[in-house]
Length: 136
Image (cartoon, rainbow, N blue to C red; front, side):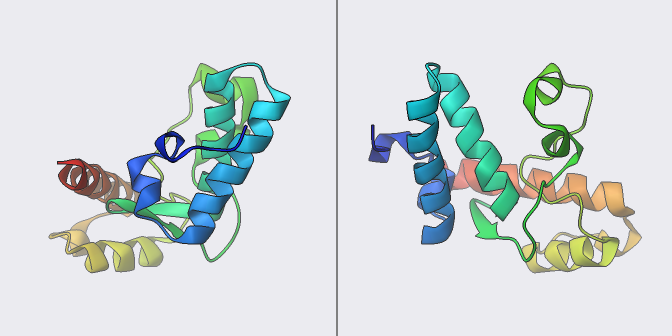
């Protein structure tokens, strides 16, 4: 069953076509493969997180394909059981300098005094705020 507009989350509606297409095509394929609606959506999100990262209220394509955090790297049942950190789509695998540049673009204050984990957390909070603002 092809993905319907209501199947596409609002953060993806504000994202580039390539990111939306990744979600929609993966969701369609997952619907054919799995009986579970939840599993189909989880699979589609996993695909998005490999090709894009969360920037404020939308997703932007990554420079390099791959998992965005420790939990996404594990995948499958072990990821669902937890134990690994997830960062809401922020690419925690970036270098500190890359995260600093993202924080600068986002206008995050105090970034020069932050370590890598603090930059990831600040970018995650920024993304959540921007997403909430866009949904109003």
